[in-house]
Image 1: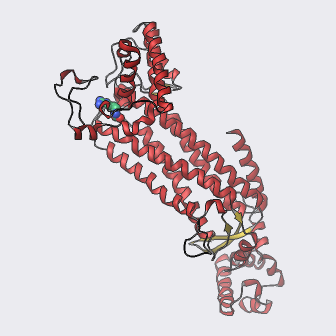
Image 2: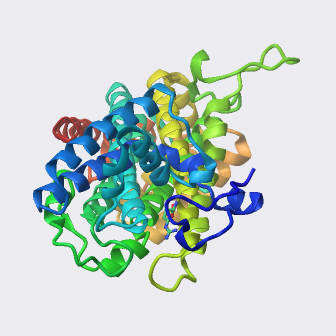
Image 3: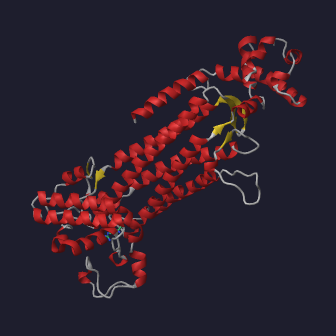
Length: 465
Ligand code: ARG
């Protein structure tokens, strides 16, 4: 129901309360109550600064601080009376503060607007999410490094086009994701650095004539400095978009790994066994063990991409400074952050529990002519053929093996020599998968020794971060 009376915070010029539908479209308290802790932290910093600058008395500032602590504990214990008529978290907190401490509450909003208030609260919230996502990524990287260390020399097929390409090591494949998630962490860290300027004190859009100390409030809230332009401070949400961008790229990486887990855990691949803790059964097919966590993770990623697009759409047509459209920033970011944290936790659990099937990996690596490149390299190195010719000769041997239904090492020396007379018995030393991976010692290559070096490098980096 709409209030009959006008709004106590801004209703001086209004003689009627809002229509019920207006209240429904206008109120954000249903979701922005998630900013309560940040809102109260911002108000405490603001009130302390106002007193330090002599703008309000320290008696009022003390009352405000005590009252805000009571409000926070009411919110934390679930006894706080949220009201849609009071629109948002900012006015809910202030109205309750007034009930608790009386007139002094009305001095809190001196030299401040909800525009700089919400921008401050939201930056603080997104900053926390950057920290949480970086921690989550660190845990996932550690789980992947553990897998890499255990399987530094386990051979598996490497794919291009999902067709067998060349043998690689399990450890190398795990570390490929560690690199990707490392860049995701760096992107979040960069975004965090850039967003760490304080909007508080920008007021509605133009700054204020009160002698406020923006450095003090910035410092109290852990910001590096105040935003330099009041219009920019209240009217941009690029910090949220940067978080969503970094989250989207990270989510894309998570989704690719989830896809691999779905494929690898199938009966056709049997590369990994996911644990019971991350799979489900079927109500009709008793044999089933479905990779639901990986599938849901893969699907949830779409919500994060959607949030980024939605917020770009909200922002793209807005003239400076604040427009109410910007209230639509929060639900997107909340949902994306929740999805990202859940996906990171689920992936860390799945990776930690999964068992690679060393024998199946090895058997698959030996199929599909995965060492054909090694044969061509041998012809180039040992018989002096130009690589293009060696490639052609090897291709004819692959065709022969395919016709016979065997793999390259199963062909006889006579078969090999019929394809090219320079081939000797020595060629068979390069057709095994272990030889193949051991030979890939170029920096960044898949050789087990390289993998062990990279495991050590990552252990060190992860322990430092
Ligand atoms: N609930 C609003 C939001 O989230 C707070 C800012 C309101 N400012 C205003 N000028 N109406 O954007």
